[in-house]
Length: 316
Image (tube, rainbow, N blue to C red; front, side, top):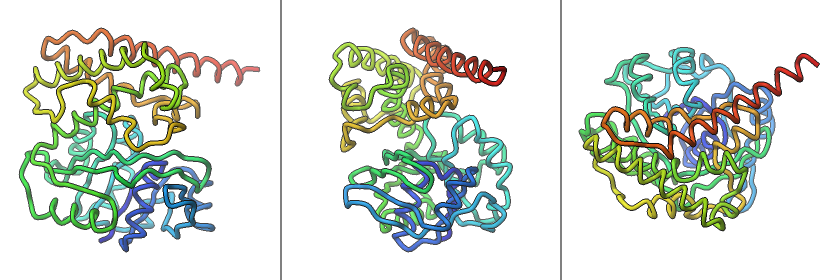
């Protein structure tokens, strides 16, 4: 199967390396010339439970170099989704499928506007990854599952074929007839830890040693569960403790959330598509979400401080 990964950061590389080693023609597309050039020249260094190895991958900064792909996996940051897919339409042919495995909610609608809703699949992955440097990742694939599905809940031949191909390559993948519920399940996990680690700069090991932060996490997740239930979404978990536990399952104590990684790089976060989604759905369905609203406001404050520092340094 020919697969293009649009957004080959830590997670994209973790998935891309697995699919490559599983025998698929997998292309890693990323905006960073240094990252791509390192992968093209030396391969992708992958550190995981098996040790450290170099994986020979196909990498490029230009989607046009790839041609049409059977599956386009979208893993760019949420706020880049529209620009990224519209700049990579050469990947999408008459039979192509565009699959979002991004964190949060709302990307599927953005992709549908660009390529047509009939081509879009949604999914959630619990695979973890940390970008250690150009062409170098720490990967957490083993024991982590991925769920994909049609937006309308049908179990089609194409989604079954893609799931089987991923699964056989070593990326444990299941088909869901309730992908919206699955997306909410993953959202609960992101709500549990992302903003809190972003605000505190704590690794998972540190976070899970702080009872006060656990209490804040459970309160945020409880709001998200209430908003989803008010919207008629069927969840696989209804106890906030489940999301708190699942978030760190199988990951090392030194692991950092993607939100913390973004802030450490000086980048804006995906807060609007994670805790911000909870706030929007809560407002839509009459569910109060003060904890999530506070987390959104605080992360926005951190982003503002970063932007101000950059401006001051540019003037200096």
